[in-house]
Image: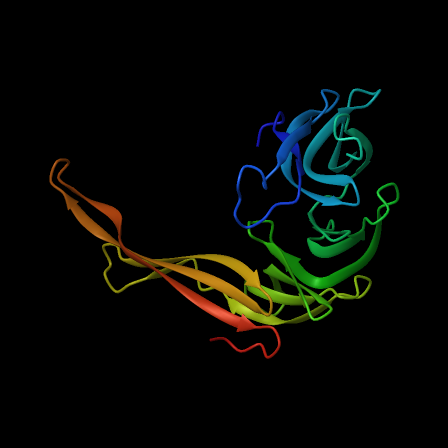
Length: 253
């Protein structure tokens, strides 16, 4: 995303389901964009907690030696929405959810940061032995019955890439529960030596207590192009399969 992407700050008044002009009162109260003191980079996402924006992205600053120092999280005080101010920055950025930031450490393992105090963000827990992918959607929080789960796209030393379920209720001791859905190979080749394959893509959505994994399956084949007198590789069909997992019994439906 471009660096100049702005976050609009809106004020929502009480409204009813009728959404009439009188009942829906939204007014613009301010905006925030990355200050000019930061170079390059851009905004990846943000979360809001107790009057602070936690903005993740790539934010570089020049040091006195002329080097570029990178941070991946900016904390913005928006108590006065007309004058938002950056009050803190942090090397670690990631997915923000209810006062915690979920990110990767230098080895690629899941790491949890406590960001309840915007001026004192600290590491509180790690999940070793689990490699977490940065490809989106790679981490989706799920909350219910007093527990916080993370649906993660990643792998272990003994399991293939797929969606996994992690219990992060205790952020100081996250626990990997199981693999929810294993990914198939990127491409499965058919018997036709000329060209025939099945390719897969994945996505995920949550609605406690359910996790929905979407598996997109595309069939590829060869099609004659009479204009150029050659065969071209084309998608000849596709379908989407939805798998539902209940985190209370972890069985697919």
